Length: 237
Length: 265
Image 1 (cartoon, rainbow over the protein chains, first blue to last red):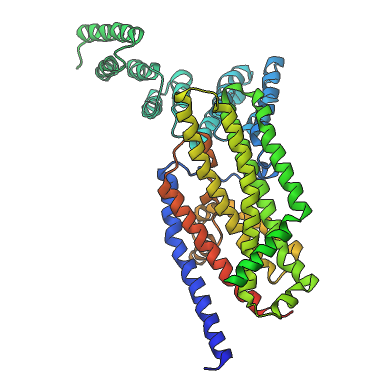
Image 2 (tube, rainbow over the protein chains, first blue to last red):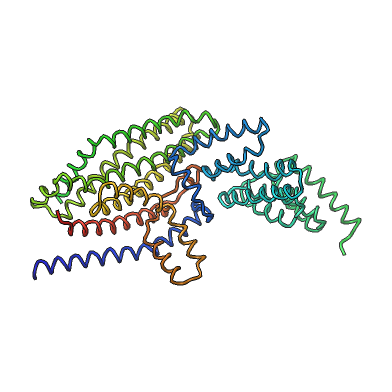
């Protein structure tokens, strides 16, 4: 066979091989995407070009930068510069989206401190909404720890009196390693809702949990007795 | 094969004499070693800061070293006319191209090895004097770090293969810039799928998906956050990501060697 023809055939074969490998990468990528979700390796779906740009520019020094900003924010907090803290908080969460404490602090600062501090009514609502939004954004990055599920539940429970939503978040929080009071908070949600039957069932569940914790058992028993007494006084329809 | 190994050896020696590589490496080593001092800002999270900063630094400096080496090798050789001299001998163009890439990889692996060594020394100093319970934790951290470092190696191999393939038909500056852009775009490639999900126009959706699958998914190799947070990354995942990296590299090397075969000197 002519040398140039054999070279041409070899070239086409190589192009074909490259094309075949490129096509085979598509199902492999799908499988990797699936594994990243199941192994909790995937970042959230929120588009974050700003976050990426920041991390790209500062290279590997994000942890150091976050520490310095965190100290700066602490200083601002003590000087009463409450509004100036917000951009720094945002920068911290951009650089370190898995720094749960920053999301918690930001959500609480917006929904509680600034909400109380704002004098005009429309402003107040804005800060509360922003606080919830901030916590939700943090939650999208940190779903496998109880902290932000609990914080969101608490805002709905304590600030908005939306007990159904609070129950939803507290139930998600207790799926992960969590402090014992969140189990009790679930029962309190049903108490506040006036759902006596569900409340008793929750207190009974709490009683079975953490048997070695005397303080917890004492509180749960007290509430369970109260709820049962109430049930006797006001039987369910 | 003999020719390929010989070219790789010469390339490695040549790269190790490169002043830019040495400066970058020195900077990386000093930066990684100094992370120990920054832990004073958060004494309870020393290990997290050491791992996060050091891995970030290794990835970033590693990327710069890779694109500067792989993107500049062939254009420089062409400029100095050494390619013509070598190719006038019984050396095939594919051997020359692959030899250059293999030599670059030696140098990149050596640089990463040095950076990783500093990181492991820091981990050893943190845990070296502690009891057995902590040794178990230290072993877990060391094994997890090895996984993260292996993923960084795979990422750099992919970036290097793209940079060297592009350098066969462009200038040094262009291929280095292109390599850096690939690093940025490769980490953002996953968003294209979400964008295509939201597209209503079918042809546009198809084109976006096509671009999504053609671009290198460098985020596949990013397990840094999981490692820093102490999550377990399965060996099966590492295997899949490494397979992706090797296949993508194979495609780039085939295309690069074809382009290099066609090039006129």
